[in-house]
Amino acid sequence: MKHYITVLSQKDLGVEFFDRLDVGIKIALSDPQAYLVINSEAALSLEVSMRLNQYDDLMSRTDRILLQTRSKDTIGEAYYLKERYLCEGDKVTVVSSDYHLKYRAKIVFDFILGSDVSVDYAYVRTEKLNDPAAIRGQLDSLQSFLSLFNRVDYNKFSEIKNTIFKKHKLYT
Image (cartoon, rainbow, N blue to C red; front, top):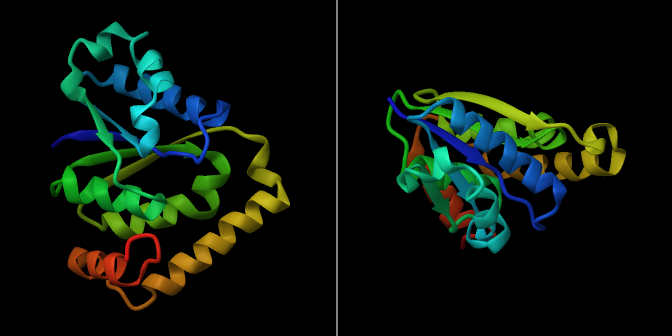
C-alpha cells in the first residue's frame, strides 16, 4: 500500500495555493514513505521548486515528489492520479481549500477514485467558505460534474475515462 498526498492546483499561484502546498508538504514529512503529487503547470514553477527546496528531508528522495501536468481541472486531477499512480488498497490524502472540498472537490474525488482507494482530506482555511460568490461558483461547477457523470458507474473506471475523453469539454 502506498500513500499519495495530492495538492490540488489553482489558476493562479497565490497565497491560497502555497498554503495548500505547505499542508501537503507537512503531511509528506510526517510519512517518510508517502509521495507528494503536485498538479498542473504549477508543478513546474520556480516558486514551487523554491518552496520544496526548503525541505531537505523531502528533497533527499526526489522520487517522492511527483509532478502531474496533464490535468486541466479537479476532474482531471482525480483521473490522472488514479490512472498514473494508484492501485487497489492505496491511500490518498487530497489537499485543497475548505470551500473547494466542501462544495465540490470531495465529491469529485470520491466518485472518480471509487471504492477501492482510501481517501482522506486536508484543507486550508480561507475567507471563501461562507462567501456566496465562491459557493455559487463551486456549486455551478459541481452541477456540471453531476450532469456529465449522471449515468456513469463510479466503480467502472473505464466508463469514467470514456466520459472524460468523449464528453468533457476540456479533454475532447
